[in-house]
Amino acid sequence: MGQPRFDITAIGRVESPLTDPESAPNQGDEGAPDAWLAFDPEVLEALEGVHAGDEIIVLTWLDRARRDVLRVHPRGDVSRPEQGVFSTRSPHRPNPIGLHRVEVVSIDGGRVRVRKLEALDRTPIVDVKPVLSAEISER
Amino acid sequence: MGQPRFDITAIGRVESPLTDPESAPNQGDEGAPDAWLAFDPEVLEALEGVHAGDEIIVLTWLDRARRDVLRVHPRGDVSRPEQGVFSTRSPHRPNPIGLHRVEVVSIDGGRVRVRKLEALDRTPIVDVKPVLSAEISER
Image (cartoon, rainbow over all chains, first blue to last red; front, side, top):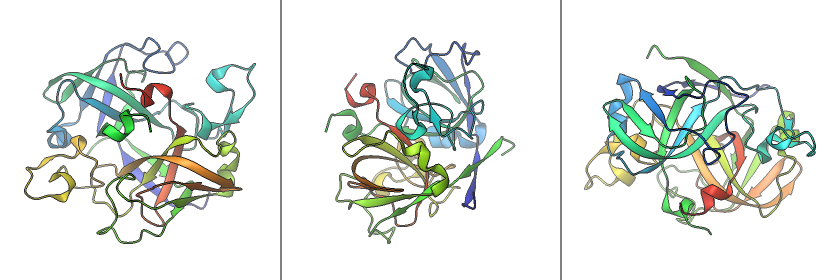
């Protein structure tokens, strides 16, 4: 594609018991385990203001996903017709950014413990954002 | 940083009356206008299954943001103490990915009309995802 490209840099990594893409849950509320977010020393200042109990959105780079896939069977179920990846949460997509809404359990220096994260062990973290109230309530 | 880097590629652009970063609203529900998402022909297949009325999450690359900022005054209000950018929605952050939850108004080929988008005109789009029900309801 002749489109602009940008450099995205990992700011940390997921530490999780999930290592097998085949058996990993599709979403955090489908049996995902608690995990650690291990941040690089260079970005620790950016974590100030994140506290235990907060709901945050973790953005990851799904480094084991395919980028040449535009259509998938939803949830890998071949009995369901294919859909465009932008109407699914498939990890396979042109820019494989993962979006994970999780609760912070505790913070230990540059390591943040979160509940129910479906990302695989060693997945690069690229951003963290607070959940906004307008995103929590139904509109 | 000695961290892994990845290539992120624009899949389209925002077309919006918002051109001035200074006067742009901070969030979509703070007076942002409707806008078009203009997708590249190469990714149109990935849009199949996105329909008028859907709530989607648009991910953008905030190309006018600064990447060397780790702390900010929330909402640019210098009377408030600085916080780490990961506890704010500041566009300025190591990887300036914008997250915009919007409603689809209509679809015209590769152009998708959405409500209340606070992104600036010509902002690169990098991904689109459906909103999951678990993200809508309070937990």
